[in-house]
Image 1 (cartoon, rainbow, N blue to C red):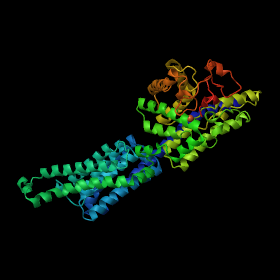
Image 2 (cartoon, rainbow, N blue to C red; image 1 turned 120 degrees about the vertical axis):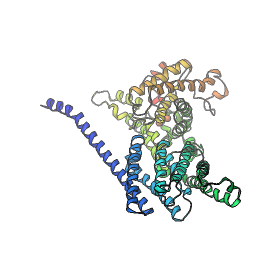
Image 3 (cartoon, rainbow, N blue to C red; image 1 turned 90 degrees about the vertical axis):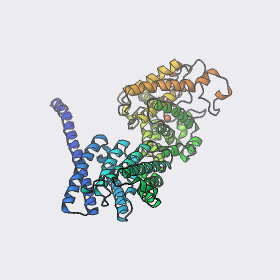
Image 4 (cartoon, rainbow, N blue to C red; image 1 turned 180 degrees about the horizontal axis):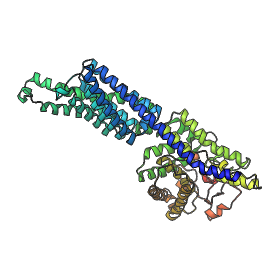
Length: 548
Ligand SMILES: [Fe+2]
Ligand SMILES: [Fe+2]
């Protein structure tokens, strides 16, 4: 009976999951449609209220907006689904739209030139918050919206009450701004982008003025006429400048509000004088040295696959900050006395080791680090196992029933969910084991790196990381190149001053001569043991079967 029941459950289980998936997809679709309709209504009300005209005009504007919103929504849904997926992000998007349209209506209400409208500002913020593609789609839609709802007719074709000139000018300014917003390394960058957007707007206005049939070129020689001619281009230029100025001033607030991680913010965090890094260097110098080694490996690998090298570096900087709490329990910070874990049960040692992830997340939150950098803290271990203590617990438990399960000795995760986090996980383990290599040379490094990457791949740790097999090949080659250059001096000058253990910038000490990886493998009395067969040194994280 029980067997039948189990079979039935096995049969139903995937079908139930499929049903749940279908229902979840329907709910998401319903939410997206609802939000789209809501947005259209808001824009319609703004358009009609702002530009009161005949009922026929209102119907025309409404229809145009509906088509525009549906098309724009479908495109966004297809290419940038994040905008409509979560309630919070949709609310922020609506806020951004309302602020932009509010500023636009305010400028018109004050009787200022509509060429000042800050569509370039909207484009810059949308690029920061979403992507260049999303910003491009939104700028096209809102440029048309502004042309459609402008009640000051500058249009080339007066009969249709649509200000095509305005739409063209502000859209071009917005598109120029999007191009310039690729990498924001300084807070002043949006101001410069705004300057160029203003130039584009001014140029288009000038070009459109030359297209006007009533323009008399000779009249431009008269100073008053030339001044009149240049007023609109000047407003257009000012519009770009204002957009850039607003984004520059509000950049930190925009980053925070939209959860954006710009290069400027990353460069701030990369400063080694930051409080957290200073404390890490003072309280856990061994961990800090390990961090620098991992950073070298991870940055080069990120560059090799075209990933975000700066994010990888910053994530690496903070990945082990949780070790500040109990640095003495991590092998790279231990002095001569290595018995600290001998006095503890394996389960307790495991808890202390794993807790550096939780502590790290708390420190990072307190310091206000960006979410993506915080995410890299738990992801650098994923759900890997604290293998040394797992094996120790199994040896001590003896009887099969009491033996601990693998799950109890695994990190809580999550596994890496983006490429840079995947690279960090691999660089972390490779750096820890490379330090223990008795005879560092490219072929040994290649074998070790290949084994470690394969091990994590087969353990499913990289399943969600977006790393392709080709990426892993490039990462492997990059790691071998970096390790070879990092340990080159150690091979060349084994007795040099720089190689003295503890000397600033020196590589980690070698195991005693003649002690190879295999030799250390069976040395069960100290943390030189590696349960998974990799070699370990007195300083290595790998002594615990995992780099921590
Ligand atoms: Fe760690
Ligand atoms: Fe680490």
